Image (tube, rainbow, N blue to C red; front, side):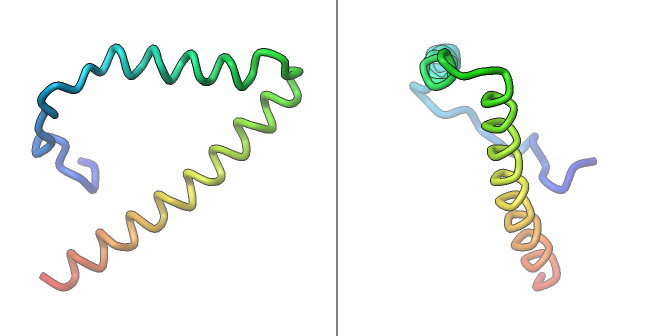
Length: 69
């Protein structure tokens, strides 16, 4: 089981997930279309590192909240 109970997530009324997905894909394409494979790997590595730090913060807050219950 994950730390977060995903069954508690409710749909957002009016949110078009496929439209959002296409918009994000188009943005990524525009950002990377002129990059070399090495530049694309570096971009991905940077994004992964940034998100790893964000998730560490989220997990730390969730753990702290669970301990305060």
